[in-house]
Image 1 (cartoon, rainbow, N blue to C red):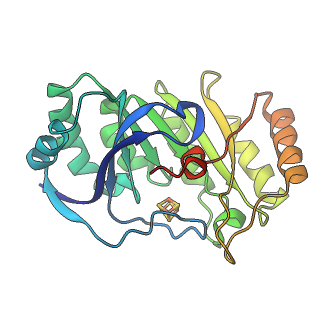
Image 2 (image 1 turned 120 degrees about the horizontal axis):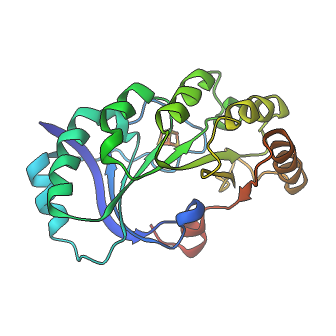
Image 3 (image 1 turned 180 degrees about the horizontal axis):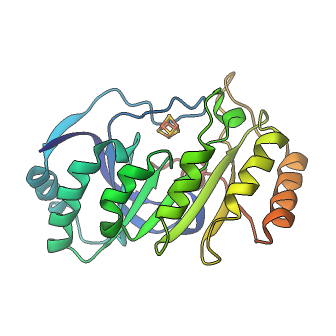
Length: 229
Ligand code: SF4
């Protein structure tokens, strides 16, 4: 079994509550979405078998806390991931940290038992610049994540609408109390996507807090500010 991998590198997590944690990143190639703020539009890849990917990973120093499985959308490769993570866990005790757009709950179900931490995005159509909605998929994804350490993140831009924030709040009501909810102000891309207005961001945060009764974190992309991968 083989999969296309864009990058394998060691760095620090730059998003959410695991910011600063040393991780070994495996970036899978390809995505089922096309978010306007996407910063991982990588066109090159190498093809790996489960064994060759493990061998490559074992070449890295053992100084990471988690293996970060990211993309693109890694759950497009769920069958490969099932085989690879089964193999990985036979050799390493590191936790597996899955970064996903949260739109493929059935694929996640296939590998759920091999994942320790789930960092899922809630894709707001107004933030993503898309007419596609994934509320049903996101709701199911949160249900499937039951029992896992869960981080749910939504990117906020100057185009994010209150209507989407209200719909998101309904979904976030399903996040278990131990889960973490983060609003991530977008990293602007010149002429394409602009900073969220700080007052709107604050208003969204308070609205979601009132609607869900939960604390809401606001954390930007730290790795971009530090100029690291
Ligand atoms: S889901 Fe992530 S990788 Fe895919 S297009 Fe959106 S930002 Fe990019």
